[in-house]
Image (cartoon, rainbow over all chains, first blue to last red; front, side, top):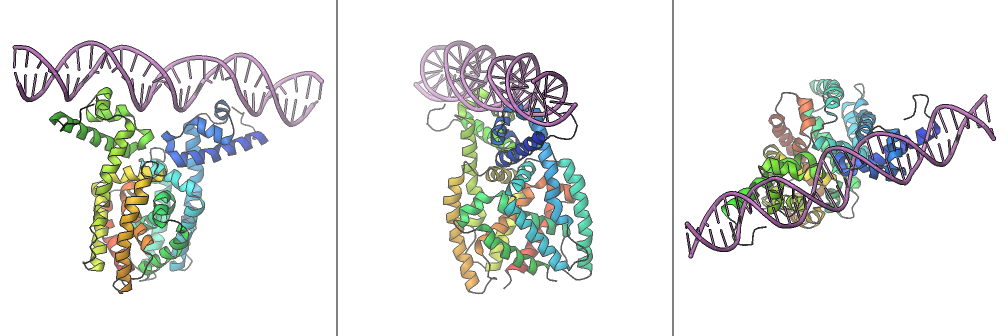
Length: 202
Length: 202
DNA sequence: TCTTGATTTGACCATCTGGTCAAACTCACG
DNA sequence: CGTGAGTTTGACCAGATGGTCAAATCAAGA
């Protein structure tokens, strides 16, 4: 293993390649379904070489999840209490949808983890996520109190946004099986916009 | 393997026990994450004994998926073109939500499969599911033409229903991490009802 | 009860998989 | 250059896993 000095050029390149490869593999096959060899080959390294950069398969997975969690929660973080309520929420939703489109691997990485009970990120859910959601829930509730948006159960509103937007990445095969040639996101954008505009209008 | 006569009492009991156990295990760990031993133990059998009833792990999985697909699609099947449009759709949604509550293992079994690209049920999606959806889409579109419900992209309407209802089963850990003690389905029922009533009102 | 097919199992096998290690190789820099 | 740290790899290991098989046990009808 490299000493803990500043990472060399090679270390940077290889660690990045490994994480990129691991994202491909883990998001497609889940943790148990992925092998170190697959990741190594995809990263253009031999297995022992890969394990020179990360102590274990688990470590790669953990690092991936924690380094991507921030990205994943960023849109919600950006929800601004000083903006226009309806526009803030709608633009949050569009950003989430855009992430589903542009970062489907990340979405599926989390989906895989969650469906199987989130054994490795349970803590992050109960802490980081819960905290962030509660913070934003206060804002949503205030907007409801002020009559700026319709009164709804804020948690379930949040769930519906996650469910709807991530569905397009997580269950892409199914969506494509139904839509055929049609581009999923072409229709999805306007659809969710309409949906939440109607739902949130007081 | 048993001859292909009428199944004996023991065959019935053991095959049922195996499928029940496999549903538990596969839905919790995915296909690759599950082992034949786990399933055997959960079914109260030895591994060779289990493999006396099913030729392989894959065969159990396949049989589970195909035998549950029907159950899974039943609510949509029941959508009646002669009923009241709004009530038909809303009751479809409530039935889906109820299935999420009562059959979460089945939901997660499919979710696991779908997230990983549905390698084993791709065909069923493009055939059975696609066909059923298209059939019901015709009804939805007619209702829209008649002004009975709001005009929406019917496929995306369908996706939204699946996403929202199955979210509660598939991502139950996340939902519970946010809700804490609160019963997810307590709030979910009214929420989705409100949502689709608003959305579908012309 | 006896017989025959159904059921069960311990022992076993081949393969896969995560991980180790010592030896070889490469690179940056004095 | 030369040298020491950083990098790479072939060979290997132990445990897990899907699956097989012959032999033993059981169950039900004649």
